[in-house]
Image: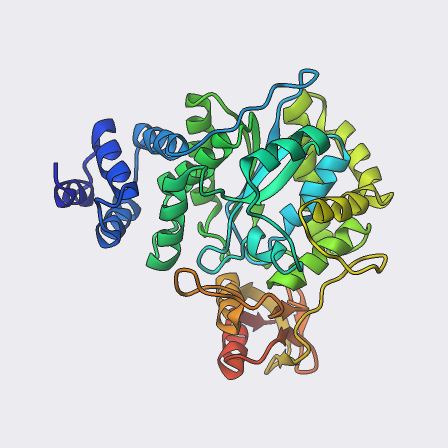
Length: 417
């Protein structure tokens, strides 16, 4: 076999056998297939797709390319986690993880960085000074044993094949592939020892899949592949035709999550956090979701989840302000983006809002690029809300590419009667 033969085979829509996938992808991991050859393969996969067997084989290759964690069931409860397919303003994990720990769930969470126009949980948490997200596996085991969970970025020791592909997909326009997304998500969860996974599959203009039909295809592939590999998955479809909440940008989203943990905050974020946490609890013990919702609300409204956030951040080296709710500083320079006419927001190009955050310096256009955690957008309007020349469509935090970003925000909104 030579790389270009397999690239051509997939480009023409043929199925790659298990041994062909193993040969190509593991040679890439060893440096014997070049980045440009892998980029061509990824583009061919995005164009032609992977079938169920190809997806399962690639998932296993990614998982087995590094070390794997394993956790015993405690009192019959599954070890659970949550994962989102990505969107704009999606700060759910920032609130859900401490809420789940405060409720007694066991959660070894491994999160990712920004991908394309979407923000990443790791980038958001790095807005907290001193926050360590590159923990050793030994430290992860200690945190799990003593506190029930941890949240880390993908360790170089876990799924190194996926780690390299993830970074390459981000900068080559090869993110939106059902097979690649499925394999990337499930390989990391399997390697982290997760036994039950709740998937937040987003559909809309700010997601990688614009329609609910496309998102449902991904949800079905995730469930089918997980079952084939012995993991239990519950897939939930959520809307991304408006940004989630009213903020997009790393520190801004941490602050919005803190507001939810304080029993306040953006109502759509709070609702989704509770929905997904209840599904995680049901996967863990099999009890009714309504029962768990009542207990989870008590953890949010009674302050237990916020206190768990403080403890979790401190355990992982983060330094929080001593205020009651430790909000992070954001860019002091702001600019309103005013509508040019009055009307109702009929449509929002949420992807363009995500790209505006990247243009401000809050996301990456190149591998390894540094980002500014304090920039972003706030007071974002949603579909169905009223705008006027005196009402901002959004408030920009930051100064980089200001004229361009204002134009992008205005172009994202379509107003009408």
